Image 1: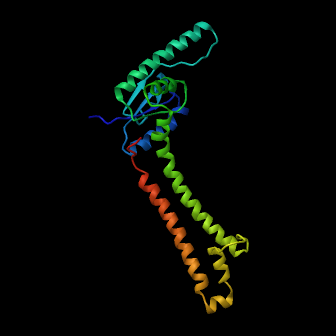
Image 2: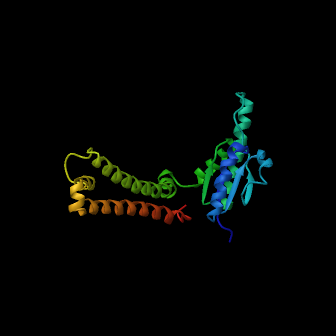
Image 3: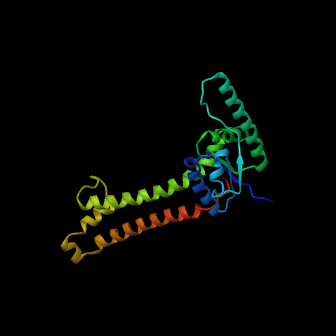
Length: 217
């Protein structure tokens, strides 16, 4: 059975196709099949585009205010919508991603009419791709905050109340304390170092663990 592809929709010019091609290469590297929906202008680029198949979908832009021209544009867009809807029913893509240009309109409209509502799109498509990077970034932010507090405490600029690792390091950083009781500073230094190391390691592991093919895509 042929794997369900990810359908990229983009205008047939380089400005739209080049970023779509970059995403297509990355998706193929991760094991996905990619197909492209575009217009006739793709001819000069199609031999280099990394897609399993390229589908030409009728589309048009409103270049004139003439009623006749606008009617023709609507008719062509509707024809493109019908063809895109048939295409989506045929290939059953995992996702449809638009890259701009008026040829993107029919496939995206068809995908929207056949697909899920906004809450499902947010939960199934957006959140899985946002929560993990943000969680990794949050862990890194905590590590930066811990280091920043230690540096500020050493300069005497830490919080006024309470005990922090930075204050403990400052308390034991005097020459006499380092000679007679070095553990006063060394223990909070070691704990701070291990905490920052653990947070960075956890963020990297979280990011690398989920940097694989998402089954919910």
